[in-house]
Length: 195
Image (cartoon, rainbow, N blue to C red; front, side, top):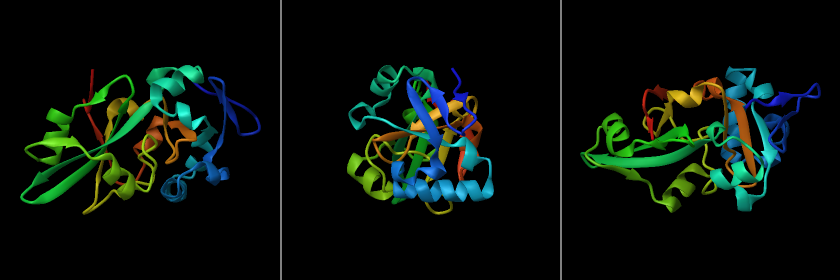
């Protein structure tokens, strides 16, 4: 399933109309708008190719959104925040996997973080540290990079199109998966998602 790109710069996918996200900052969380601006400065095509659509926030969860707006579940990607400790240091990673898989927290992520045990970060910490709403945390605009979080992308989210959060529950982003690999600090990982 691919979006139908229209001459006016919008697109149709499922029952939603998608517009360039840089032209609709009111539909983005503040960190996402800033992260998208940074991405578009480095990769100019992002200003055209990252799209956003308004959705009902009560249907923001991936399965409900896919059903409500007639979208293929395999297009969606989920971003989960995982943490573990090593020598008293907390190591945090945002893991992005297709919605048809789940992050391999107990094996792959644990080894990548080099921790004895990895687990999902508590919701209140993830929301406060990301500046995004729960259920809308997304790789664009996260505090990643040296001395901060790691951004781990399953190889499957970097091909084809991907629907991801926008930082707020009232909208979703749609973009070519290859652009996710252009987000500053991202690491593409084989078999991050399982299932």
